[in-house]
Amino acid sequence: MKQLTNILLTVFLLSSISAWGQQSNNAERQKRWDEMIAKRAAFFTERIGFTPAEAQAFWPVYNELQMKKGQLHSKMRTFHRNAKTNEKGERIPDFEKITDEMVHIKVQEATLEKEYHLRFKTILSPEKIFKLYQAERDWAGELLKDLQERGGRPNR
Image (cartoon, rainbow, N blue to C red; front, side, top):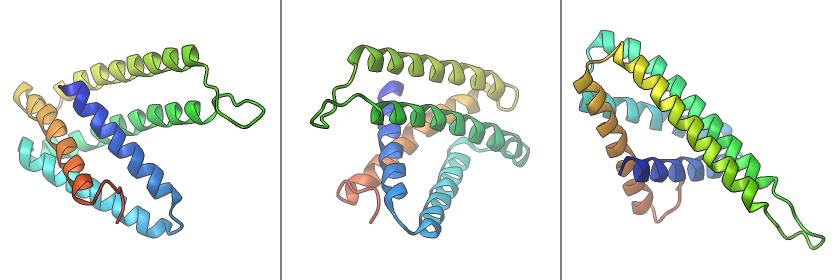
């Protein structure tokens, strides 16, 4: 279930980032991104019940994890974009290379999850870590619901 949630969140974030990247108005894009990050923080804070000290210690670590995961996802997108093409310009991907890279990136992401889980244990109680993982799943559901309500378009 967590893997499905992560996949859905990744798909949404990747499609959102891709669509945002195509817009010419960087200020508007940044504003929407900042709003989404603020909503996520409020959502997690409500669901997990951070103390002020926990929140102050947690958010920099969590944001660092998200940045590293984003770098892995960006690496995957770049890898796909640079797949081989034939003389007609048709894409002919090296499926062995792609699937090997996908697994490698999943392993890297799992390693990050494990590393940051250990870091979270120094900041939060086991109960709050459990609530964090639930909040991540629920947040992904909220993002997916929002996307569906807008007709599958990442931006209105």
